[in-house]
Length: 204
Image 1 (tube, helix red, strand yellow):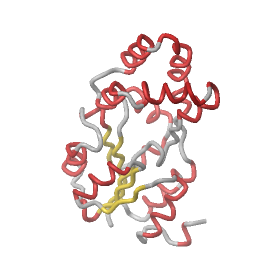
Image 2 (cartoon, one colour):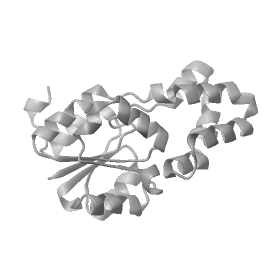
Image 3 (cartoon, one colour):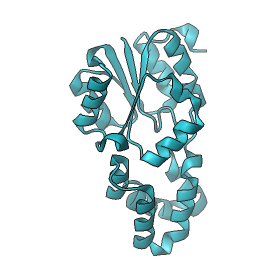
Image 4 (tube, helix red, strand yellow):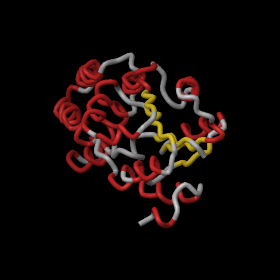
């Protein structure tokens, strides 16, 4: 194995807006915002880079006027909700020291990715960053994987791809990547150990 490719949300970075919304506003409101905002076509367009964050929020406030307060709160909290999984981020320098090339392949809006990249210095450990909004394509579309492979000369057969979404892992496997479908962030260490990338010395 030569390369390790990471998703960001729910792999290296916390992203649980549904939990925040449910705790503050209740299950019903959280469900509506999840369906109509977080899982909306417009959110995907934002990740694709064809809709700005301001356009997204304005559109959703217009559609859901009765929940304007909640939407504005989510808008203000989004950056705060994107915090590193410290235990997973701590593995990056270990992997780097072992000689692996590290990459990000993630669906992310332009402005939000810019903010977290500026805030967290662990991004300096990566050999390459492929972010959906920079290339106008999103996972699991094949084009974004091809961009990673071609731009950084990544051989999928010598690479491990890690993502929390099954559909993204399936597409990676079709390219020949070894894959980890990370259902729980805390399982990253174990997943890497199963591939022989981490030993028990690194598991402390």
